[in-house]
Length: 433
Picture 1 (cartoon, rainbow, N blue to C red):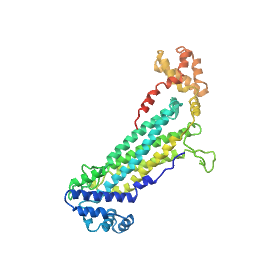
Picture 2: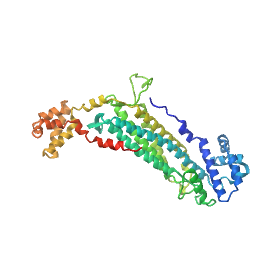
Picture 3: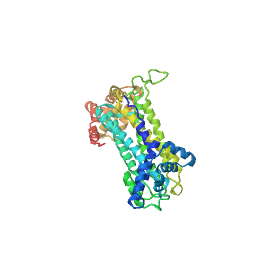
Picture 4: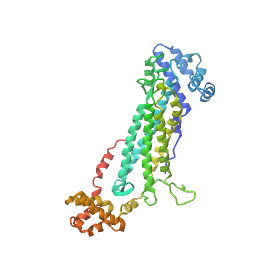
């Protein structure tokens, strides 16, 4: 059974409560830093710690009048703190808490994503090793090519997901950056030590240089990493959809008890989860493009990025988390049909061994062009007549003049094609997730 996706964990990251809680934490840490510098009485800090609070509904009420979310928040906090509130937000600008708080939320969201990405990678690895001897036909351009094993396909996905995990980790590192540097990033009214203290307490790095905002190349890289991971999931899901086609039916996404595939056709078992994943990947790519558009700001500072990010960042992190959970369920409970894999492998009556015959003839001294012509001639006859490829070769005197029956039979040895796959699975066993 596919686990039900639980939204609350990710939703809590992007809740108004969590956002405002982070803003308050940043403001209090900035006061702490100034106390250590002898700029604020310790009694004021204790008063702020004891009384600082906010009510999201009250903040929203104030915002309806002032039309500024940070001012509304600070006004509500001041209502609770009283006189000592004069030390809050001293020398700071709105984006000091907006951008630093957003970095914390993005890091939290990425931690949830990384957990699911690692779990999916681990399951792909396990299932690949489980299917290392499940023979199937490999396809290029959608056309039968040469034999392979299903575990090789899953190994390909496992290594790609491992690369995605690394991309996501790098994105987490890139976004783990804060700024407390004032209206244009000059620390005009705050010592840089305040920023260093706040960021250190939050586990962030201070931006080397900033304007009023953190520069949006960081956020673009983060959204790009989400989109690349989504593209991989789309690739995997698209392959499942292809393998689930009626005339192929080598693999099938889980179909749960009581599930119905069509309002009109009771027999249908449609790949709805994989289709959903393919569709959602398009949104991730679109959002990554919007993040790239956010990089260029007037004089490196305006708020044209802000309205966009309020949509694309919560949406993209939530979507990718959802896609990972869903596709993990698909992989874990994927139905496989090895008998159909074998049937499809034999569908072209031995044509998948054509390269072996070609190379055997080359080994006998023919040029590649000469050997290719002999093999292709018989392959085309097999296509057009439906006759067995091996039989046609054995009837061709130009072929048998170079290859004896045993040598020709050896070209159709399946184990010979798969003899080096152990190297791939050895690498997979060594994959650290």
